[in-house]
Amino acid sequence: MEGLDDLFDSALGLEDTHLKEGHAEGLEAGKELGRREGWEVGMRSGFEIGGEVGFYAGCANVWKHYAEKQPDLFSERVKKGIESLLRLVEAFPLDNAEDESLQEVIEKLRAKFKAVSASLGVQQEYMPSENPSSLEF
Image (tube, rainbow, N blue to C red):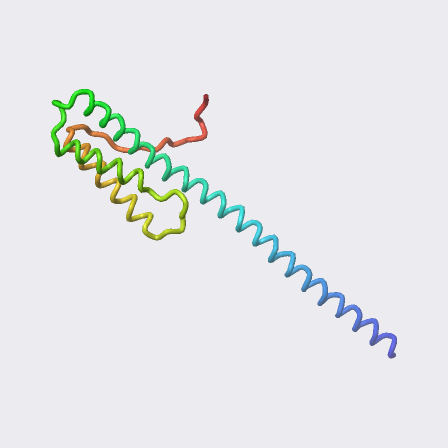
């Protein structure tokens, strides 16, 4: 009878060992999947935000160029608005994606862009591409 008890104890111990190993493997697999998904979401979000900030920078630089070439067409108020927009773009944080003030900064950029666009009398707004991966060079 003692041999039978040892067999059952061994079988129960084996099941417990496999459960623990399976749990540990599942935790590692879940962590890895979470890291990959987090990386993908971060990349997508970074590209979206970068595209928007780049759009504002491009518009502001074009406006600044024309203001320098044809200063009579731009009021001092508009020129100051363009410079202010460029300062916001240049000050945009590139290294701390976890910064909670990032949303505040992007909102300031959007508001300044709308104000400058309105003062120039242009109806310009950022419209991201539906399929950014369709770009070809």
